[in-house]
Length: 319
Image 1 (tube, rainbow, N blue to C red):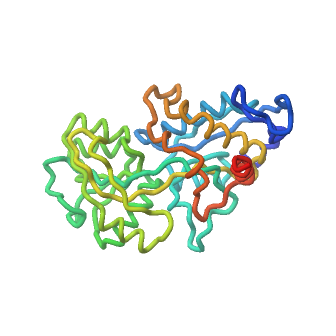
Image 2: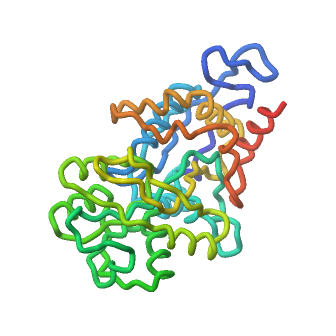
Image 3: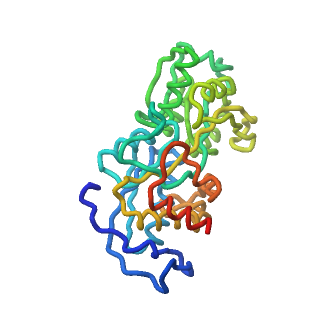
């Protein structure tokens, strides 16, 4: 449990990459061992891959730190585990984080913004579903329980006043069910391309349903976390460019993590982006979404405050 975490990295001067310039000292300071748990996402999701790559890189680069990944339902499940103290770090979509008063969940802050997810509405090529309204009374997966997909797709259905027969399946389960004809459509809020949909498109011709009107409705109703976007024609085999809505993803940390430790984690993310994008040991495939990680957008976490350690890193970058 996080509440028992008392061992901490010594000073903010500890910066990890070989050859890094140390702030205020000429050598790396000694550190204690610390075990960290990072909540990721379900099978077939980008969260699972990028979380694994982040865990591997932090473990390699932060002195004394070992990070293990924790599979989850994704965004809201990760927020729950962070608040409960079951994990120290976690991934979440920005919209699932912002509370009614515009702040965020108590006890949690942002390390940085990582990349944008796009809301996919996927059907098989021969489906009678041609537009969003055709989902009425259809069998539709809204993603895993407590996922960002569930959170955002429920908002879309509610604002569109569409009533579907919903199921809660992970991305991999949704793709399998759609391919088998067990559901009529699946939502997926994820990076582009996402493994589960890529694999489905290799086995069955698919289509993406445009969500431009739904994007506009979300932007108007919830200013901040949403933006109109396009899933490009190169994303999936045989699928033309499709308008949709995008949501940023952020890496979160519990507020009680030492600022020096979060400073070091932040430094690792922005100085080892290429290694993160190449994928972790648990998944040989690349993580192209990680190429979106950059300092300019990394600080843009909306109304969710940065962890003091992350804020210090961004301040130092401006000097």
